Amino acid sequence: MINYHNKRFYPLSNSTNGEVDLDMVFVYQQQGNVVSCQYAGKNIKFGQLMALVLPDGSLDMRYQQINLQGEIRTGICHSTPEVLADGRIRLYESWQWTSGDRSSGRSILEER
Image (cartoon, rainbow, N blue to C red):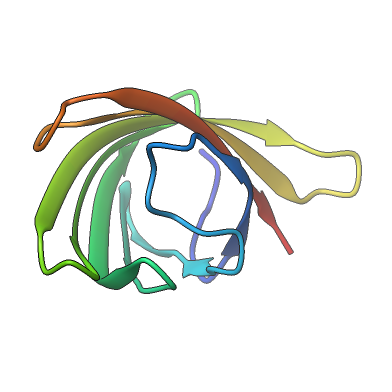
């Protein structure tokens, strides 16, 4: 199992319908197979995510956040890890809003 505890992830890209900006940082905490994180950024006042680490190291995630317009947005995400040559992790994410327009998108996060 991949250990995500205290790993810092930075967005490399995000679909235009997402609210995550490229200056954000996600610091994951892990206990057993449960991952959690709180985050904020240019477009997000407050956000939380929780995920289960699956046997293949991928993350089955749910997230909720309050954007700058004061809207509560929720979604689901599946993150597939790639372990880079230097041991860092890159996450390829497929996500979908479960509120609002229910659109979907993709993002990439990378450990630094």
